[in-house]
Length: 336
Ligand code: NAD
Ligand code: DAU
Image 1: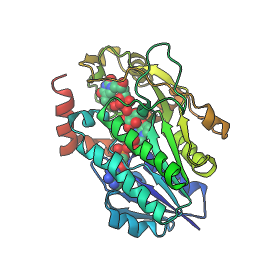
Image 2: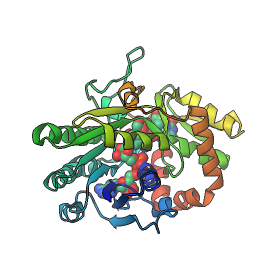
Image 3: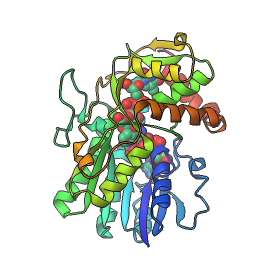
């Protein structure tokens, strides 16, 4: 039996990864280590909580003592734990620096002392910054040039992980993925904001003129790539994970409204995000060379996501009606 530590396993992508590992490997024990911030939700894992190969530990990856206690039993680490929302980082980035930068060091240091077999740092395409029109998609050797507080903190964690591979010969691998979509995504990110607002016939707030481009990746495709890089990736290297689904803000909002048979009149252009990164685009050939390919195109990923939010109103209404969400929503959208 191998033991895999999944930090941030109660969040959006981490919960899918916990499920993926339990369903894929009969000889893996999963420890989900999560602080349960506003974004952590154990309801995301109701279907596996009684699995004898699953266990949950509530804790902060910045808590060296607790991390060390758990790490004694661990063969593999996958670090999903992070503050993940750019707009919140613009309001204040202290928690981002603690969890996405400093705590990555704490986790790496403990994993090193316990000689873990593999440490996978879940990074992001945002660490590369923003592309100008006509510039080639990023490869793993493109320079890191983050531009917002969230991505600067993530780049710090990414570079610290690289430094452990170089300095201590530690078996570290890194993934840098594009915008994930799918079930259980906290409705502060664009796609679930748009889908849940459309269900309620509320306006869909498009930042700026809707020209910013993102690549979209269905969350289970991301989990498959992480699994592959964890087991087959070359130590010390980073791997881009892109869905080959690039679209700008206008395309995205129109596709969502069309898929949900809602009128275009719901589109509302609002004040842009400060420092908005205008284009992310990844060259994911290196990950594909390991044998990975995304299984979902943008249309099927959006359809599956919209169907899930339509069928699971209890999950997101509880969040949207909560005090944290209400405060965030007011703060982010009131004066736009
Ligand atoms: P999320 O916000 O849905 O979940 C984050 C989880 O981490 C939550 O369960 C939260 O409770 C937990 N957490 C936060 N700080 C913690 C700490 N200090 N200690 C322990 N647990 C903590 O995020 P997500 O969208 O699932 O993203 C997961 C990871 O993937 C992040 O590292 C993010 O940077 C990265 N990523 C996300 C995307 C995306 O599109 N969402 C794309 C590429 C990379
Ligand atoms: O690319 C990977 C990154 O994708 C991850 O590292 C981050 O954790 C994740 O949050 C996501 O970051 P983005 O900033 O790209 O995602 P977000 O959903 O916040 O915004 C996507 C695009 O939509 C972006 O151009 C801003 C725009 N937007 C966003 C919101 C919330 C809107 O137009 N309206 C909105 O209400």
